[in-house]
Length: 165
Image 1: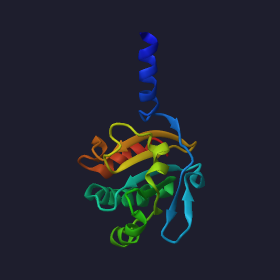
Image 2: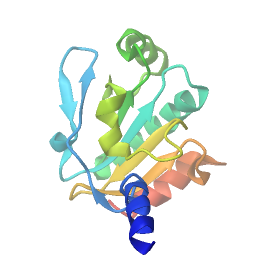
Image 3: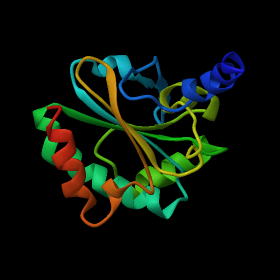
Image 4: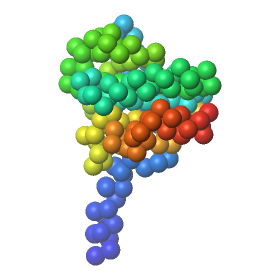
């Protein structure tokens, strides 16, 4: 019976978004046709955010991320934001015009995002973000309903990110 229980629990553990874990290879397309990859930012602290361009919470998070990039970018933080809804490519230019992020904004297909987020029961909650340290290790994963985004989200995230800068 113990072997059966172990067999059933193992797949759940593999997809539970374990922290810490090594950041996988990931790249996204940008509006100018180029690509950007996580590996380009090795040695920096990266906040990789996954959004839906039509999601009000994601739009609000973009404003918070802009502030973080301005305040902490000179200290080694790099924000990257990736739209993941169907037809992201069609919506990303309008989103960029409306919200003017001061960091790379792109898109990717959902299956390409799964290795970074390690799907679990909260995969449908957006935005989702991972914090990657200077050595390429994911140190945190945040969901749109995370306490980190309650109250003064910018201050909450700033305090957390500063531990890794």
